[in-house]
Image (cartoon, rainbow, N blue to C red; front, side, top):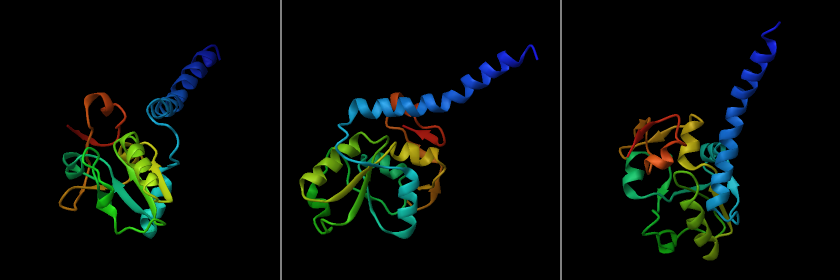
Length: 166
């Protein structure tokens, strides 16, 4: 019984690590994003993906997309993104945009909104959060893979459940 307070404190600290990481991701996204584009969770996107209700746009660079991407996503890139790439898409179609963590994708989502697309959301935590949740990604050949391009060493700390590629 003498050890109970010590064990309790250790367990409390260990249990709060998950909350700290989530809070820190919130802080990161709040730092870089305006919050003007609503988020969707990886769980919500997975449900929509399985029912084919949403257009998924990948706002990462080609080398990132080639390593792996969410199945049925359309690569639109970031540096060379042009609205004309999706001119044939209905302005009322539900769209989710993702990147590594959700920072670049907010920028692309904002451009879509400004171009008249009504239902645009940003994937909270991006492909990193998708893979951390255990959802599958595919490579450029359409094969399931554990590899995810981590963008940079700085951002790779957010990717916990994948083989990290640079």
